[in-house]
Length: 135
Image (tube, rainbow, N blue to C red; front, top):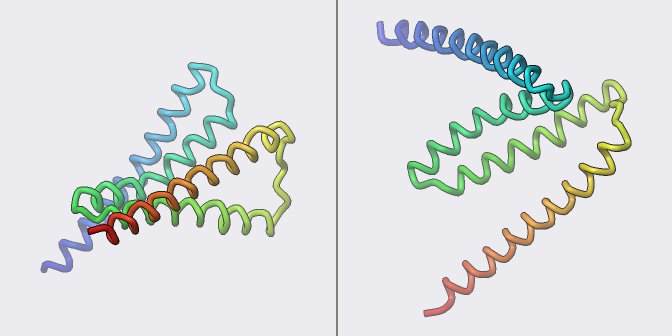
């Protein structure tokens, strides 16, 4: 009887997840259109939030339980997978049209942020190693 109840709850949760996502997308799209937000920004934001919500849930739970490493690696791993695998597979299937203005604006910003995050990570490792070695 216990496994039957778990299966029913899983199905109910899945249906609730799908319907909640529909309400989220419809509501946020309508609100963004009221404020005259461009369609590309609406789509990118909704996709970004939709793909990041599971990671947010896992990271929040991990942080509450004191597993900060899991929270950080979950976010970084998810973003790397989304950028490299999903975008790469889509580019293999069909060429991706990209406006030159987006490349000029977003590519340097991405590189700068990546360098800043990598530098911060390296500096924190050096600081952590020094604090472990000092008595």
